Image 1 (cartoon, helix red, strand yellow):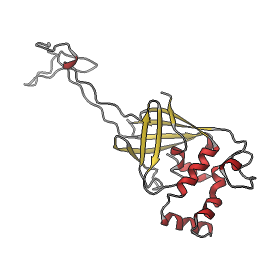
Image 2 (cartoon, rainbow, N blue to C red; image 1 turned 90 degrees about the vertical axis):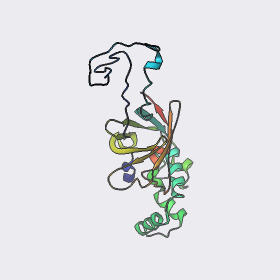
Image 3 (cartoon, rainbow, N blue to C red; image 1 turned 60 degrees about the horizontal axis):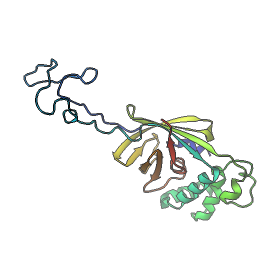
Image 4 (cartoon, helix red, strand yellow; image 1 turned 120 degrees about the vertical axis):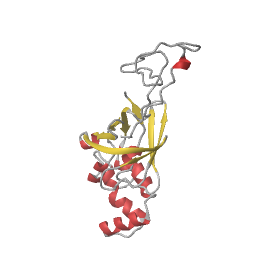
Length: 223
């Protein structure tokens, strides 16, 4: 389960507003041609209207605090789904590590207990999410996105709230890359925000260890 510790900030852009009519905030003033930086009166049509003060560009939509509530079954099912998306090379490395063949059923059975917890995780005779997770309580993971620092900070209750800081970069308005410094996040993540809900989906080659925690359940915005 220690491989789950490798789990997962965006560089935000801020727009400078210029308004006709002098300071509209701390340190803000109209600069007229010729270099005169003193505040100038607003004259003419539209003075004082919303047209004279352009709206600021949207801030990073991921910025803030998020909380994920997930079950043992969420975690196990996400692991199983992502195992079916790993590359042939990834599967080969797993086979070498375990001494098994590259057949997925055997590899899944070998690792699946590491993704379960609770009284049945090590004793269940049947390796299904329901059997492995019988009696397991739900857990939480917090996510703090700090655009000014370009980092995402994850803290997982499964690991006693041990926090991990991961630099991230916005590719477009719905895709990010994460960097843990040791190339575990080989594929970017697509994110989706609906109201106060945030969900992630890893693209390309799947990683059951680093990719499962962000995907196993949606996050709810808390601030």
